[in-house]
Image (cartoon, rainbow, N blue to C red; front, side, top):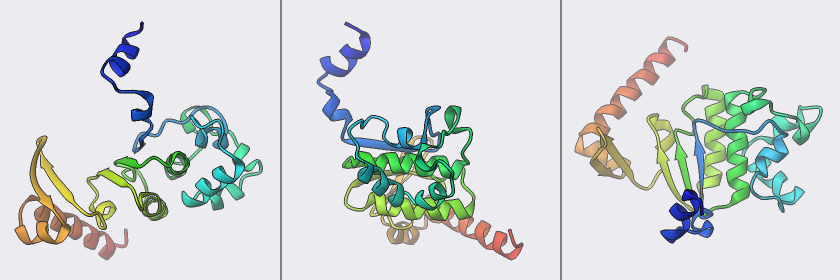
Length: 192
């Protein structure tokens, strides 16, 4: 037996355990295949209706409608023919289609410009409703509406609570929040 088998199944981590979560990462892996195939990856029985619903939920429908081959457009190796925002939205559509009860968002909007961040954030807001979501973020705008925030420093939890509680504590979170708010205000003043 392979070491992978032993790692997963000897320790009672079955495939069904792995199926309860989906990760949307800052580093999106896409196959050199079509948008459709990348969205449906791992779900060969996905219907056209399911895929269309996922595309709409991920705010990818408008972009796909501009492509001559629509969902059958090839993305290139690693998604090289798509922008960062388009790749993120394909990944979100994949997560929507998977419909896992646990969603892990690992810096899911870190490399996006403000227009694409707004589209992706809107899609993520729809995706996270009604499920457990763990969000790793440095950009506070991506965690404005979460139920609980855990602030970490050097791998240690230093604070946790709601946004209001953490701002009132005036600790690490509040300091970082103020710094990011100042950066946003400066950018707006400078017209960036």
